[in-house]
Image: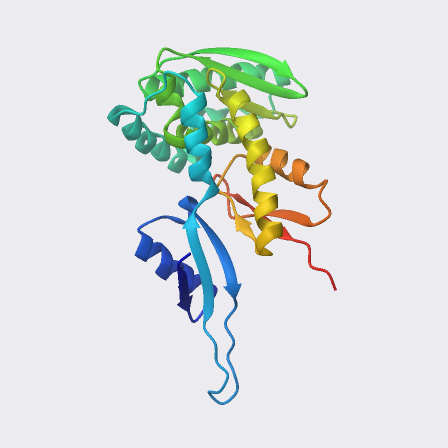
Length: 255
């Protein structure tokens, strides 16, 4: 496993990512040692990190095996750029500026219309269906172009999930928890996350080092956190800003 050094953990990580030509979201970063300043130039030690393909790559492979008839085309890759533009302009939504303090049902209707509009802008028009499940409002997007709305590694769908949650928080009087789904992607993803949590826990206990997972929606992070909360040897916390917030799984230190 490659080891990279730097004056700080961040510098060592940057060097490693540059050498591997990968982003932070595509790797697992394990901190081997923090930097030490030493005294009068003696005993100085550089920070060390090891970097390897992230568990998210294993997720992507599993999704590819389980989600049938979804092929990522050039059109779908271009869609990710369109979604990123939507993310960048989320605060400029004319709907969210005009609408506020709506009753639950009115907010749900507006969100359904908002998701319909987004799907059209992404050239994958969808019929929006609502399902109430376990305290969640699940918005199913029925479309002939599932691959476009899911995107590579679920990137497009997760971006739409974030936009939907931001929108409903702005217009609704009450706090509503929403999930955006295409086909049965979320159901299959749930099983994958369960396996991911178990594999990650084992790796952390074997190496004694933290593992950084890929960015994922809050409800997915919550699922992994809940699964691992039963393990007294593991603890989890989130870092980063939405929609790129990610989960860190680390061993419990014993004193």
